[in-house]
Image (cartoon, rainbow, N blue to C red; front, side, top):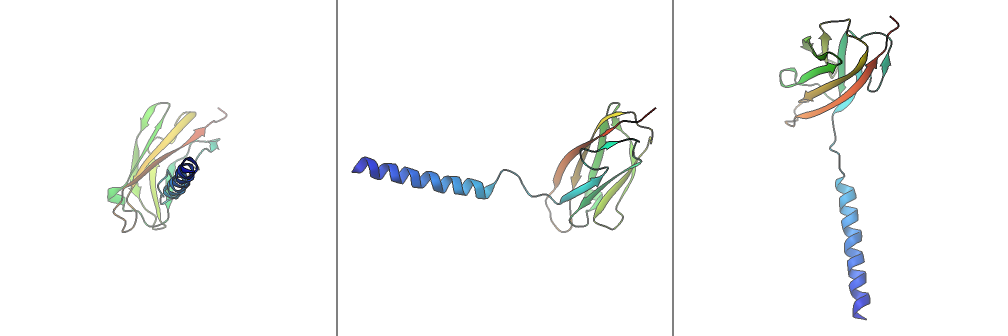
Length: 128
């Protein structure tokens, strides 16, 4: 039966397509491992620093970190690594107000020429 044979061929092609799509995936791997303050954390005091951890030593001159919150963009200074596969920066104003914050980062890691980027958020709620 020609109709049945065409149906099996289409079914086989669909199965192969689904397999290939699942192998490719929709998210790229990232060297980002975690941060302080942690993603989605709720803090009872404002952090003084941001520290991001990666699976290899980041290239500081080719990496960036920014902090945005209730007051807009916050000034950061002293961008460096502690030599422990991390990036660290000080928040210039340590008394940032309560609210939701977003850390955006761009990093070149180890010998990998790719530029990785991402973001995460945390919340500050103090008892003032």
